[in-house]
View 1 (cartoon, rainbow, N blue to C red):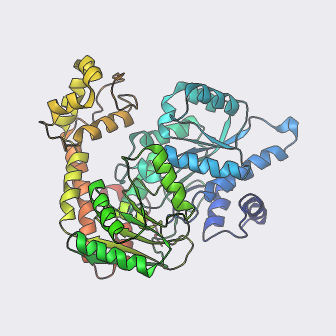
View 2 (cartoon, rainbow, N blue to C red):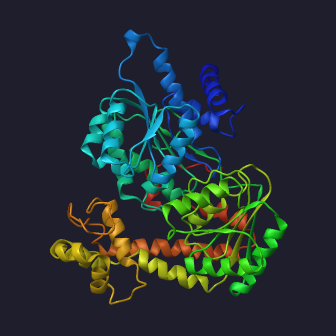
Length: 505
């Protein structure tokens, strides 16, 4: 251990964040980062991943200021890649409230504000900058970064970098190239959920040497998936009546305590809400059909304990940094083990006893199977959609989504394959990020991976296996052991060859 490094980082922790001591492996990770070593950090939700790059960022900035003026070159900057606009805003707001120079640049800003922030960044302001990987498509952004020395690159939600991950983002696959353009700065990749295949793919995509303890290699910090304070259980139920009864028992067990109940369908959420109102159980509902202001109001109310119970779809949770959530229930089967683990990780962040229960109704699987079909259009559907966007753009601009749906989905209004295709075309930069289609323009060709039927079939099969894993989890005698085994599964032979074995705690 380096006493100097520990003294610097511990001082920042106490002075800026108000904590007396680091948790678990945070100090080791921070020491390695400040020494110039790359790391992959797998840490449970609520485990303090953000501090692992925020503390080094502030130490680096302070070191620069401590230099004599004549020795100062370009001001250092820590660049944080994050996939979620709302989450990066919450993190930046929290940092600014502590007097830390942090900002973000994303599509939520108007042109004037983006230009203003670009100018401030180029002039040397800010120690931390949060962006999505898609921001690297903008030449003016890349030009701004060239005026700063990028000392640290943090890749948050790093599972998005891997096509094996549960939330794949195509632009994340270019992070290795971005890193090289930035001069290969010290890099730290962080996620709460990553199987061994995903761990290896993250390192490969980042173009970092194989796992190892030497500074020239990427070191894996895996805190394991065990959360001893969480009581995990699966209860088989049949229909809404049993779900209501079970939820009522949990609420009575945790009176006036905070809890989240997750649903797949808004319709199911609303049905449960109506039943709870009749029982006099106070709650609020959160889902994607609400306005942004309503979602913000509900989230703030939950954070401030004005209403402890939230019925929600998976739109609720990212950015919910609340330590005292005593229970997380799943009233419907989620789509993957990764999603499930991430959501239950929001319970008991304060280390106190909490419970996580999956209400398993086999009929709910039908919904997820349908979702899999919607989220995995075949190559023909991608090609037909792209052809209409390319050759009938005037009609698309004039009549929008419904015109497209009628020609692609045979009038099946519940079919959501079109939404998936448009979202993927946005992620690949083929169309701009706007969904009403009134000003749509084609920016490039259809990516070969989306037009490859074998590739599409492989993607569907991977997603089906993830759903089947939840079925197996529901039948396991020891849920905790099953989760550990799932996230410690053996590396596939094709991926293992060039990489050293990973020691997972």
